[in-house]
Length: 130
Image 1: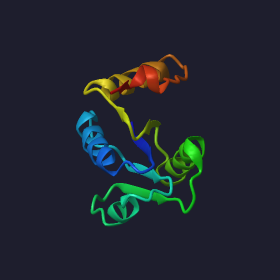
Image 2: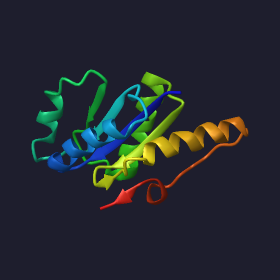
Image 3: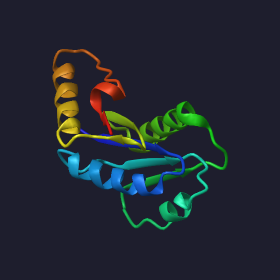
């Protein structure tokens, strides 16, 4: 099963670096891709993301602030269009996934598929905000 994390960010460069590292560590296996949507940041985030050498990164840099809903929609649309994943995990840049969260999420998705059901897990259930 393939998973694509989508992180949206606005002026949170230091938090975003930590988020990316933490999500990569928390994955039961490496994600198919990692989508970061930058919402017209002014703190150097765009420059830093543009210089990233991480091969699985897909960075979407918006010229204007679309708001969280616009970013999540854009990230999900691009994830499906480019990667065709089995699941997408949507995260704000300030959410802090627990070590076991993504593995549990993937287990629940797999169980739901075996039962022929779809699952939607809200960020408050799936992630611990710090």
